[in-house]
Amino acid sequence: MDINIKIKKKLNNFDLDIDLESSDKRIGILGASGCGKSMTLKAIAGIIAPDSGLINIGGKEFFNSDKKLNIAPQKRRIGYLFQNYALFPTMTVVQNIASGLHGSKEEKAKRVSEMITRFHLEGLETQLPRSLSGGQQQRVAIARLMAYEPEMILLDEPFSAMDSYLKDQLQQQLSDMLSDFDGTVILVSHNRDEIYRFCSELLIMDHGKILSHGGTKELFHDPDQKNTAVLTGCKNFSDIRIIDEHTCELLDWGTTLHLKKSIPEGTTCIGYRAHYFDPVWLSEGETPPENSIKAELSDTANLPFEINYYFRPQGKVQPGNPEKISWFVRKGGAAGVIKEKGLPDYLKLDEEHILFLK
Image 1 (spheres, rainbow, N blue to C red):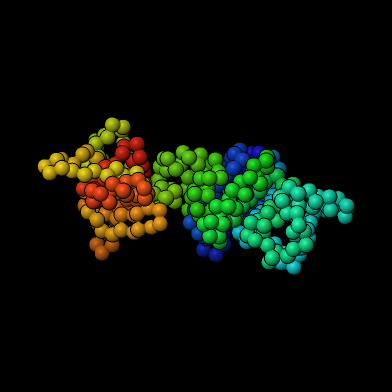
Image 2 (image 1 turned 180 degrees about the horizontal axis):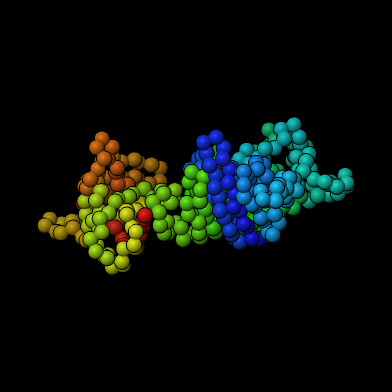
């Protein structure tokens, strides 16, 4: 299904300006709270009207400001799953599923029965939402959404209010439920793990605009821009001074990189993810390896499954608020070596994991 969205919307002091063309079936929108993710979904669904632009989904025009066209939400065949599922609290499971259906009483009853079976809700038909578990509520919400055969599904932070155990269960259930859905699914989240798990194409949003757009794995591997790297989870950054095509000084970390590959044009800083450092222990008189930074411990966070080490940078720092270098070590891996040998003297950067950013 081809998607063509070019819309603008001003709300108080916030400006939404989206320009998106895609034919992918699983699209993620990642960004910090307040960046315009949910507003974008609501515009696609018809819940809010843009000030200008167009929305064309699968060759059907839903909104066109030049033509003064704005198709009503119930005629767009777009399913919208809200964060809290928005089930009607005084309606039973059957009534909730039937609430968006049209047709005769017999037709609606048949469709509801199909959804009850498909989403394993047998025995819950007369229950009210408050008596259902989180997983059951999700299944009812999906059943209601799928009952009228949407061509597109919009998921708006569907797991944000859940604890990690329930979240993992429901993510898997949702993935299973949508596995045979042939339409387009757009998932909005501020959680990069959810996006990476569900989506093959990714939009990074910041302050109402699309900052980056591309394949999900490709953007995580090569974010290109610092803001994109931050939103995909990178913790460590240093401004650079380019010396030549293969050499640059890390101004914040007090070392110089000597690289086999060429430094991309326009690079102003590098990023390095916290799990990718290689620890180096030196014998007396031994020279530090190339492309390494001195490991001077500042703080430690001992978490259930990993230990986070924070080191003082050796280059320039902001007075009163120095930016720490983060090294995250999974327990059972290097953590065991550290317990035996103590903290490393240096942390080495692997060239393959260096992010060159603008």
